[in-house]
Image 1 (spheres, rainbow, N blue to C red):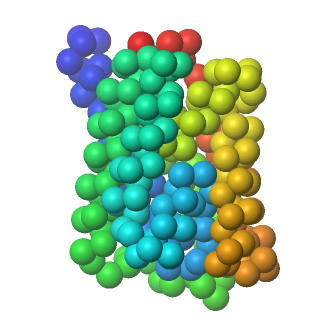
Image 2 (image 1 turned 30 degrees about the vertical axis):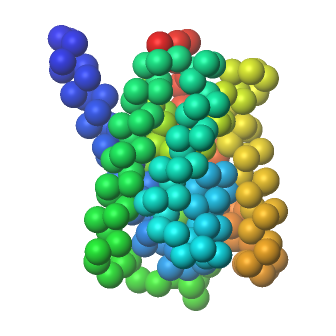
Length: 201
């Protein structure tokens, strides 16, 4: 397969992954109050306390994570990650211009947790599998995995649990149980889909 066809396929997968991620966050997590962990959850924290759109908060936090990961993951990864961040921010900003497309699942938190995990897990799994990052979470988890030898899903879970603990500041503990289920499921999906590359450079 020629180089430009390979690049086109990679960018198409990255676009699909970031769209699925943005769609799930906007239509499920934000509407139901079932939060995410890691950087995604941190953007929801900023959205709750500061009113900062996740499309903006994501870019800020992502750039910080990419700077930290640059030396470990290489220039090629950083380039694709920046493209993915721009795609995610664009998709989320576009979705915000319209009412949610899915029914509010606040009354069915188990379904919100499962469906949200599916969108996040598949979206992130596609992006990482393409040698990119849908968000700073991916760069952070891959850096932790590269430095410690941990499974990528385990690295995701560490960052997720950290943010979920902070989310207790605005989410009742009973509701956070469903958020925990969501991050465990999404981490499992990512682990199943993830096939780490030896080098992103």
